[in-house]
Structures are given as C-alpha cells and as structure tokens.
Length: 551
Image (tube, helix red, strand yellow):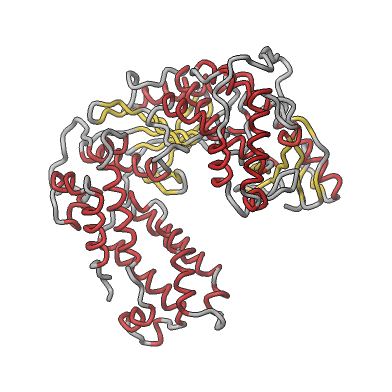
C-alpha cells in the first residue's frame, strides 16, 4: 500500500498526506446520516438468562489462533494459555457487560487494515477495510452469536446459504448450473441478475438494523447489547506510514467480526421482504417451488423465466436497497441469460449482459458448460506451482514433503467448487495431464527426459489421482444432499421443470456421471446414502480404483 490519490485525483507521496487521505476517506465512508436520530433506550430491564461458564469456555476454545491483535495488543493464544484463570476473569467481565449492557471503551476501538481489491490500487475505494478488534471482545461476541443463532435460523429462508450451519459456497455454486442444466433440457430460457452492492457491509444503517432485529423477534436485551457495542465506536487506519488519528464510526458493521455476516443476513432479508420477493411472485418453477433468488451474504442472484419478471424483481430490490442505505453497483451488476441477448437497461442505466460470470469464485456459464471453469482452475493451479518453484526445486526438502505441499497448496485451488462439475473424457484427460505435470515438476523430469508416466507415479506414489479426488468430493457432496430430508439443494439436484425435451441425444448431465461411476440407479443410491458407513465405503472403493486415462 504505497502512493494513493486524493479526492481530486492528484497523487500523494508524503507520509502525512497519505495518512490524512486515508482518515478522510474512511471517516467519510462510515459517517452517519445527520438527519437520523437515535431514539433507543441504552438499557432494558428484561434480561436474557445469565452467561454460563461453559459458554465462555466454548467461546475461548473456538477463538482462532495466529490472528492479528486489536488495539490492546493481546493475542488469542495468551488467553488460551491462561486456561481456567482466563475463563474466570472473562466470565466475570462478560457477565458484567450482560447485566449493565455497557461495553469497555477499548472493545469499541478497531484498527482498519486496507486490503486491495481489483482495480486501481491508488484509489482508496478499491480497498476493503478489514477491522482488527480485541480478542477478548471476541469471546463476548461469540457468546452473543450463540444466543442469536436460533433466531437467525428461524428468520432466514433456505435461499440464503451464507454463514449458516451445514451450508456453504459450494451449495450456491452448484445450484445455478443445476438450474441451467434443467432449463436447457426442457427448452426454457432463464434470466439471471448477479447483483453487486457498493460497500455493502460498510453502508448498513445502525438505527434501521436495530429496528429490523426487533421486528424479527430478537430479544430486546440482545438488541440493546449490540446497539451499545456500535454506539460511540472509534477507529484508526493502519498504513505503511503508521496509523491515522482516531475518528468516529456512524454506520456499517465490522468486516472481520464474527457477528457481522449474521447481522447483514438479517438486514438483507428485511430488504427482500420489503421488496415482496417471495415464492408467490416471479421466479423459476422447479418441483413445486418458485425460486427467484439465491443468496450468500451480500452476493445476491435474482432469477426469472422472462425478461419482464426479472426487470420487476430488480426494480423492487433496487428501490428497497436504496431505502436501507445500500446502493447497487451497476458497473459490476451483470445479466446472464441462457440464450444470447443484448445489454440491458435498468431505469436508464446500462447493465452488461454476459455469457459467463465469476460467482463466489467459480465461473458459471450460460450453457452450464464446466470445461471453461476446469481450464481456468488448471491455469490457476499452474500459477500456484510457479509461485512454489523455489521450494519445489530445493534439495533441502524431501520428496515426501514436496508432495504434501502440492496436495495442500495446489490441488485445493484446482478442486475449488468441483462438486458441481460435469466432467467429460476431454476434461478428465486435462486433469490427469496437469497432475502428472506437477509430479514431473517436483522430480525435475520434463517430457523430454522420455520417462514414462508409470515410472513417475511409482516414484511419487500418490494415494489417489487428482481426478479421483474430484470424484470423491462429488460423491461425498451427493451423499450429503441425499441424506437431507428437505433442502433447497436436493430440490435443485433432483427436481424437474415443466416443458418438452429436445429431440435427439440428450446432453450429459451432472447426475449421469454419478450414476455411471457408482453403477447404481438413483433409487438404489437413495437407500445406500442413508447408511454413512456403507456410503463411505462405496466412495472409497470407487475413487481408489479410479485409473488415470494416460497411465
């Protein structure tokens, strides 16, 4: 983080000027609307049950290690080393906060670290401000999270997968290709809008948030604790030239706080309810449900079966988002349709229509063809190998360690989101070729050395091929979904749309690959997956016997 620009676009090079600019930008970003008055009580009389010692122990255990400390400089490891002494002290502090509903002033201080995003690194707006907060405060925040969990699960619909138990990015990454796959089979056009908010977490209006929480039935005691935590907050920005002066925070939720994603989920749910986005309105009809949005925290995808329906959804969400203080970033908001279209306009503003989109880190195409994403992942894997070049060439590191490094630092990059891939023979060959290229790179045995693939594999002795790992991930995910009684992912995976199939040979579907490798029918697999041990054994048998096509 070096030279930056001021408001007028002039480059700043002096340390004090850079610090002043960072304070100016962040203070303006988090400045509260002057027209909004705080009309809430600072203390409520109806208290929730006292904090248990076991809750403090759980919160301390779950605090992550090797994380930067907040303003107090106390690392999480120190609290854990103190064991019972730390539990006793933290229990007393947390219980006092619980009853008085007042937070220590040090716990209201945060240090913002600017993390660069894509775009011009001289523009402050192209940085994400992540907050460093006290590790001691995280114990209390973790307890609050536990108390809020039941209310959040009750209020949030299944289309919101962000930061929820048993849900994750892979669910939403898989849902969209499954919808497209089904739509193509039954000759339907699906219209998608991938919404991007400008500084979503930073623009949450505090007073509106407290009203939202109260309206959703969150106990007034918990709302009061959250309200007093965000009241009179101050922050500083840490730059390469030192920290800025302290300034007040008037809006937004901390990026880096465990509670922030949960609070934002409820805030976003309020917007959707106000916009009237429910299953009685426009959407994609599949197995009796009408799905019109998929969400992962602030990443929102709207969908419909016609252009008019999607326009209506976008307009409603845009209007209600603006009322809540969130603005759509039209430049990054994209439209994707399962047929070629021209660019769109939303209230006079042009929105780009694309044939593919990077959604939650995975490339989604309008025809649900995974080959582009697989090629992209293999390229990212090659870049990761290049970054590890010095380590992999070192003669001081054993071969076994190098193999472990590749499996831990390269293969996960390649296999990200692989649960949704439909792999054909051509892609399988590319995956096998990439794996053997990695092993040859470690052994310094290029193709010109005329060593056979068998000799390379005998020296490396990998327990499973990379393609086998991908297949294992797909089968485990399939079993995970099948064991759920009722879930959105199960509807997407097994559900059907109304319509007429095309004539001729159908395209290979995701489910076809599962049925082929297991050699079973869907009904048989439904029985097998209910027995975890039996399914685990079948997955192990299938993946370990998987041979590379170029062996």
